[in-house]
Length: 265
Image 1 (tube, helix red, strand yellow):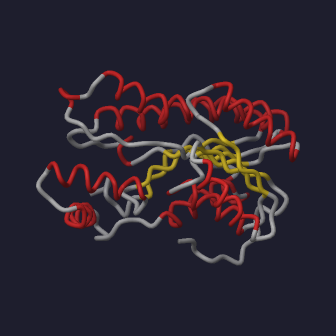
Image 2 (cartoon, rainbow, N blue to C red; image 1 turned 180 degrees about the horizontal axis):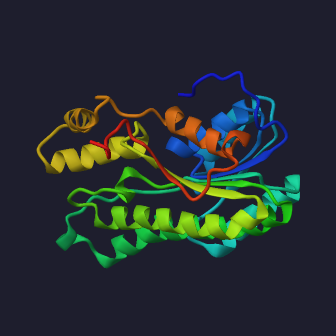
Image 3 (cartoon, one colour; image 1 turned 90 degrees about the vertical axis):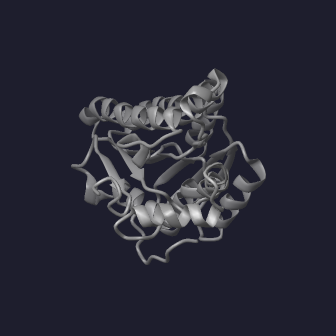
């Protein structure tokens, strides 16, 4: 689902989105296309990624669908180079690729820990590192890293996820410091529970462990939040669009909670 908009704030700009095939990344790809940006969709889910790039193209913008494994430095570098070869610049990066694994601390295998850290933290690092030279040369640009409310708080059976998402916040601050002299910004967005396929899968997995149906688990998470509902992906994409816009040029190094007041409460 996307939210209609009449704004065209990014006409002629180039947005690269990791994790574009699903969830928040997908919503961001569609939002930036709606607002006139050329969009590069980066994901390992090739068929779904091509479908999203096609939806973006239907909005009258140029698109690329690129196979990109964010844990592989060569794959990330090649994808970024393909974007630069196509358009000569990158104005916006949304680093949204991520996974979740909810396992009690004493049961987490090292391989599971490492895989989640590789995708959710190292993948963000590699994508930020790859686009930074272009933004420094342009003396402009916006990096938006998708963290989580789990980067600021936590709950049982989320050690590797919280560790990675906290790391994204720290990484974002460091990136912001290095890009600031070049007129580029870096910010993190920390969504609350959002109605993505990943969260629905978590509901089935974790809810089942706790003796709940997926629907009961999602309602419980909604009730945790002062607004008594979960976020829609387009609501997170709207904040990302703001962070990429001229209205936020003096905002950098922040980790913005988009969680309906959950962390506050």
